[in-house]
Amino acid sequence: MRLSFLSTGTEAGVPVYGCDCPACSRARFDRSARRRPGGCLQVEAGPARLLVGGCPGLPGERRVPDGRLDAILLPDWRPGRLSGLHALRWGVGAPIPLFGPAPPADLDLVREPGLLRPLTLEPLQPLRLGPIGILALPLTGSPEYGYALEHGESRIVWLPGAPRLAGPALQALSRWVPDLLITGADWEEGVPAAADGGPWSRLSALRVALGARRTLITHVSHQLDRWRMGRMDGIPADVEFVRDGQRESSEALDLTPVAGVERENAV
Image (cartoon, rainbow, N blue to C red; front, side, top):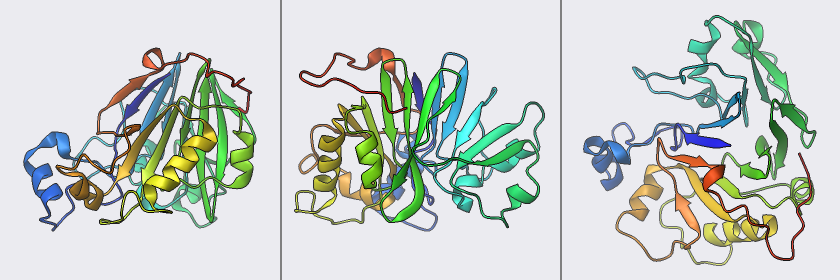
């Protein structure tokens, strides 16, 4: 399974329009510090190719990847997730399924979908697209979905915002043991990293509950980037912040069985 992070920012991206904070100022002259909005992940396995998180974009930029897409997995139907889909909508070729929670009846894409096919995916009901197994994960206090993806021995959990899996999802993944936990960071500037109940302790608790081997942070705001600038303390050693364009591959993952843990199928 090959992963490409097409965008790693919140809906405002980095730099944020009109903001002169250190993170936004840096991103205006350092392209490597820029974050496209939306936290979109491209997943490839064999001939299958998916987008996870929607298809956001910025005006004037190429919003969709080149080549065929087999499906798009949406955590919700907010405009920020869909802004880049309109270019696909008027494309040609085979229809592209949009899987996610039940779409609103008044959604423009439902009334006039073009090449796209909005479809409801029931939570915790396994779906297979080619060689990729998919499980929609319900989140605590939200109608959004996260997703568990499996290809061979490679397994990832992708969450759209701050780490919050509902009890049934945690139970379904209790012995699944993902190689990667990819989660958002909807946290405000100045939240103490080590405080009880703070973001790092919540993330650590989820990582322990899942048995995740690595944790990658996406959906990063300019406030969090500003907090991180020049800061090495307070960030757990097993937490990595991803950048736009970063790539990961299951060939580089440590797939050695965890001692004392027998993996079970959930997807």
